[in-house]
Length: 115
Image (cartoon, rainbow, N blue to C red):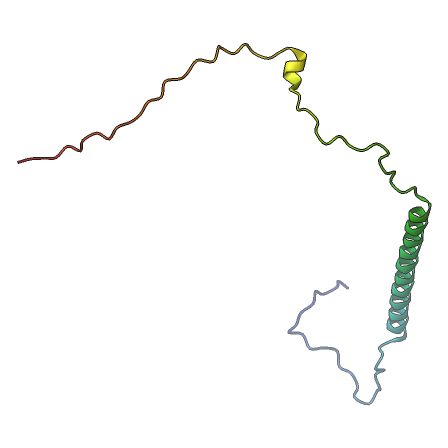
């Protein structure tokens, strides 16, 4: 016999009102719920354990690491700025400093339309 797809119009199987139905479902459903709950509990314990291991390793590395060394020579405060291109000798030849003419703009008269 072929399996019929779910049809919401179909009447549900009749249940004798005199037979008690367990509130927790069948035994297989109860076992499945227990398995899921237990596996979730084990997963949470594993996550907490891994987090604890990571935290302990971080504390151990922090305790055994060497602090950053302090500078033994004072830093130079005034270092001359150098031009790496000039140091390499590839500076382009610039023309001699000639004054550039300054153009001053004077306001031009506004044309008026005279009749």
